[in-house]
Length: 260
Image 1 (tube, helix red, strand yellow):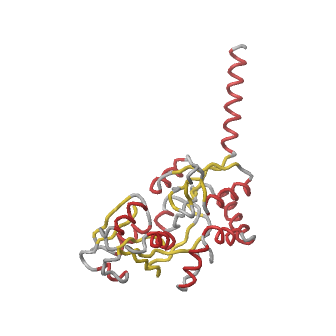
Image 2 (cartoon, helix red, strand yellow):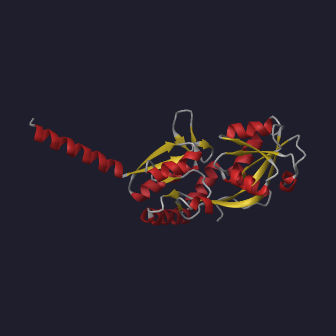
Image 3 (tube, one colour):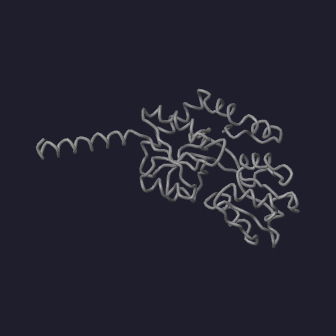
């Protein structure tokens, strides 16, 4: 084979590889948050966000790839171009909109409290007293909220759900500020050492994160979300993954998360 022919073949191979890559929808998520996004014992991505991501890729006519990235690194990965979008139970708020764009919302939820069983905290107002210790997960809206509204509290900043809930369980903090769905699950796992106060201290919506310049993709994703909702996709995911949480929320008079 001549050098010219070899160079041509290598160029062709690179072009094919590039085209294959460009047709793949790469979705970033922190897969440590069941039942929305998690890696199971077989090493497979599973959960609400994963099924939604697969259906989104089908709608776009693209293959799908999931990448497991720590939550506080997702926006940087998106902006660098290493992923195409973020589907990771991410709250769409003004602070994040300064650097990325969001789709229409697909979940409505809120920040709530998981208190230590032995803490005297009975409401959010109690956390405003001097000397309170509050755990927050780094990079979350719970952290942002606590920094803004609990200036006298001592914040314990940790980088995983496991570490945060452990602080509550062992009584190292008065409370954890986090989303309702997570706190329901963690309270159920630790009913003897925690108390879940699910009345939202701040309402939030989750959406798919995108680069600000990807307006075409944003339009296509919004079309998918509307179609998926109209065809009962979110209802089916709720029944499959969140039946227990739906029942608990209805019992406390709290609207279910997919009821936008």
